[in-house]
Image (cartoon, rainbow, N blue to C red; front, side):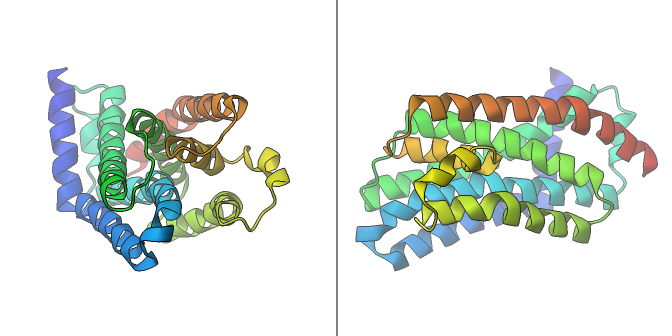
Length: 239
C-alpha cells in the first residue's frame, strides 16, 4: 500500500506539472461561464450535458495526453522496473483521472444547485460520475496504447466523438427522436449520459439504468483485462 501511495502522489505531481489538473478545472470554469451566459431559466437543462462531457470526453483526452507526456519523458520503462506492481501503477492513474472528473462534477453540480436551482441528487451524481470516469479512462488508455503518437490520439478521439458522442449530444438537444435510444444505448457515452440525466431528476427507466451501469462496468473490466494491462507493458518495453 505504501508503494501505491507513493505512485499516487507522483501521479498528481505529474498531472500538475503537465497542467492537466489546471486544464480540467479551467474547462469546468468555462462551462460555468457558459451557463451564466445561457441564463438562469435554461441553464439547468444544460448542466447534465456539461458534466457528461467532462466526465467522458475530457477524461479520455486528459488520460491520453498524460500517457503521451510520460512517453516523451521516457518514464514508462522506469516505472516498470520499480518494485511497484503493474496494478498499482495503473490504479494510481485511474484514481487521478476519477479525481479530476469528480472535481468537475462537484464544482458544476454545486454551482448549478445554488445558482440555477438544478434538481441534482449528489447521492447518484458522484458514484455515477466515478463509474463514467473509470470506464472512459479505460477507453482513453486503450486508445493511447494502441496509437503511435499524439496526433493519432486526437484523430482517434475525434472519430470516437463522431461515432459515439455526437449522437448522444444531438439526442440531448432533442434533435433525435426517442426511438433512437435503443440504438444509442450501445454507445458508452450515451449510457453515461443517461446516468447523469437520472442524477438530475430526469425520468430514466430502471431497465436502462441497470443496463447502463452493467455495460460501463463490463466495458471497463474488458478493456483493462484484454487491452490496457497487456498493451501497457508492451508500450513500456518498446519505449
